[in-house]
Amino acid sequence: MTPTRAQEVGYVQRVQRQAGHIQPWRRVVIDIPGPEFEPAPPRLVGGTCPDSECDGWSTPELTLRSASVRGERHRYYRQPRQDATCAVLHEGTGTVVFAVADGLSSATAATVGAAESCRSAVWAIHAQLDEGGPGHDFPAVVSYVVETLRRQAAALLQREDPDLAQVEELVATTLVAGTARSGPDGVELALFRVGDSGAWVLDLTRPWFHPLFAPKTEGDVVASAVFALPRVPRKLEQWFGKLVPGQALLVGTDGFGDPLGDGGGQVGALFAEHLAVPPSPMWLAHLLDFSRETFDDDRTLLALWPRSEGR
Image (cartoon, one colour):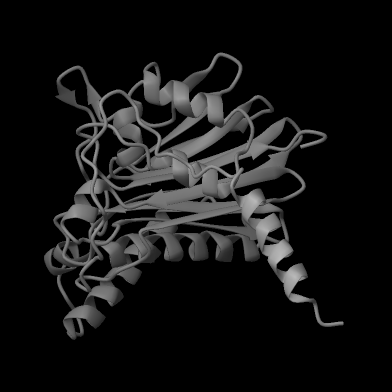
């Protein structure tokens, strides 16, 4: 039956009344906001990607949320987001495999480096799990990522065998990657890091952010220099532990870690409140895109929660 003109008008009016009750999200402001401007489109130099992206899903044991947003500096200067994240489920073991990367601003194709390092790290760990291992041979993962970055640089340069310095100039990136798997006493975590991106266990009952790797600075001394792939440190930073109900694993680039600090300030309070339970992926992206003076880097955050009954 074809609706009458009066029915059509009535429908439109009802929709408009309902839409009038929906308020747009206002940008989250912490302390003094940064400048307001309309972001410019990124130039097609060294790779590009969406201004923002988010993801979220659950297994019977774990809930994952992730988001990555372009920083104000890159929005203003028409540069693409140079952060990346990736996470997959290994079906056979129920293991969540994840990675977060921050392409160095000095690298010409930093966007490509970050994306490729995440993708290749996740693939290498997933392959180890396919072979029946625990997925914790992280030196082998790093070697595979470095080789992937070398091949990517060769394709960009159209050269068969670029040297280390040329790969570094094109696709240098930090990387944190690892696994989360449900065990008898909680979620078993295994992570490694190259560079200054970070990882924390958030105790939701206090709240308290416990860093899993050495902070960037201790007082006025730089504790972890910006060491980036394709260069490999003599000793790879690794962390193994457990995650129990009432805690969340956070993995993030320094765009999140720098304003977070020790977690005792306004940024820590904001995220402790909103990560008490898994938010929607889009809300996490909205939170991560907060405005605060002087903090204008890309921000990426991946979070994992053990699932409890009824959640």
